[in-house]
Image (cartoon, rainbow, N blue to C red; front, top):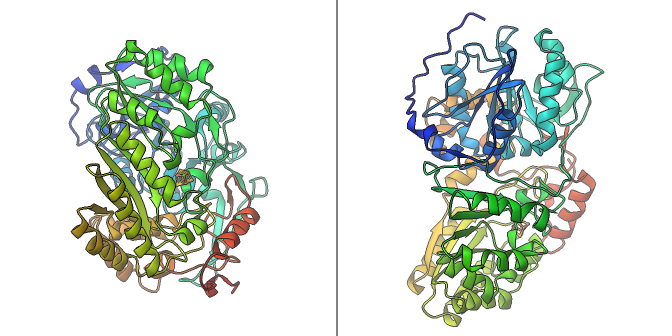
Length: 557
Ligand code: SF4
């Protein structure tokens, strides 16, 4: 390989890496270790705050057969002149722009089809790609689907076997490993150029027709491998308490994509990990989609409440509403937390039945009362508009519920954060489009809540549209993403790119607002999530049975 990789057009402040306190011992790479760049397509402070990125980097750094260097958009370690593998961990969809920029900086062609034996293998992993890699599929040689614990080691071991083979041989060999998806080995055909997908088939008979997302079954979950004051959450030590969520709210990717619900063993993993971390910092983050549902959460709380941890600042990622006890609020208040966030989604019983949210208004009001009684001063509620089957009167019930909470907890500062429903792959609502009335509904809530002194913070509707586009996108979007990159990241930029490609790909409405037939081949039909389609359809039918009227668009076309 003759290309010169350095210098990248980015600064390299050495002090950033010097501030790191490592909680693992890196191996000394052997002579012919694989030169590998592991990138996070955003700034260092963001990347190093990602537990997933930290863990994968440490796993690679502990192998003596790999020489890993880290790359961020604003800094990097000493990079190899001829990397054999370049990996990206992606946790935010719009970071694809930075992936393309970084590939360009490294003088690597952006499209997998333009790479040859002289170029490194480009792999990607993380929640965005595991949910739906298809809009980004043309940019990657390899996508790792699912939990990295076993997958990463299997990937490196399989690569070692074919390290000196041709690129095509390497890719075909890697495709034999469960959870490794090689997009270029599948052909996608379309019913029409701007219509649904007709088929997705492997190009070679030895390539599996369906790639199974990998699930780690152990009871030791992730914990920080590095603590640094330069992280976005300064000096935080993170431990993953649970993985997935057993509640299965019908729209929820955090639950459906990562099932089954798994919990870290308290004595065998969580407490030793926390003890290790609290030797180097006093800031502790408990992570997981549903932390308070750990079966021994109370014991964990008692452990953290010991006097020796009096100066520990505690953050909890997510708290299920009906697990907010006075004790939990008290512990948080004593550990420097003033506010708590709970997801209520809606004040309407009907809507909660649709989404399978097993919660009632009394429990929500009690949670607020407990939060206040425990000494917290603020409560952030998280809601959603445009949920399938939602009618305008359901919003009135949300407003009424917030009013009741305010009445029951005078003095507690109330905020309602509110997003728009976005369909996500591998959930029962993957077939349903974004409600065209959602923006108006956000405005309606603002109008009604403001006079009552409720701080209303809607998420950008335009951002929800972009999210929906990427979450239900297929490979035809690669062209669009390349064009949009030059226009900016606003919705207007995407619309401009759609205009430019008119007649060559489906329109924005097809991806975002249209309800899709359940007979349709989905862009991710060849990538198997935790639940079979038949189960997702059952959950969808259960949801739509609570609709006031049946959604006609879901009938097979
Ligand atoms: S409770 Fe929260 S994390 Fe769990 S499924 Fe529902 S929305 Fe998802």
